[in-house]
Length: 125
Image 1 (cartoon, helix red, strand yellow):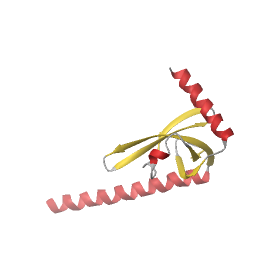
Image 2 (cartoon, one colour; image 1 turned 180 degrees about the horizontal axis):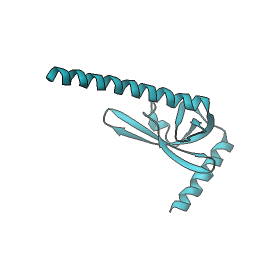
Image 3 (cartoon, one colour; image 1 turned 90 degrees about the vertical axis):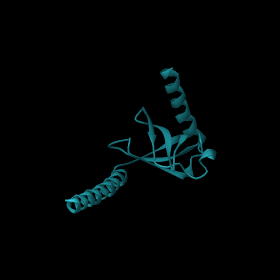
Image 4 (cartoon, rainbow, N blue to C red; image 1 turned 30 degrees about the vertical axis):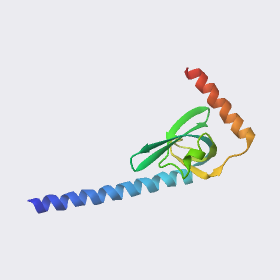
């Protein structure tokens, strides 16, 4: 009986891993097939034991999004409150990918996003 349970357990683990890999591939494919590009503001790095979670804010179609995106970038404390290129899915703008190697330095784009973020902050309080 224990042998059957052990085999069944490993079958579920195997299919669970296959599902996670497949889901990640579909996530990246959707961003690639329905691309949208904007800029985002890197706002927070939250350590969670051995891992960490990075948070960004961005606007798509006049709607503010605040999302987490996997692990924090290297030397993240120097990148807080800076602006980076964000790729998203036009079907679901919550599906994002941020390239922390591409910092945005265009002052017009930065001021536009900052004004939207400040206005939204003012409305929230």
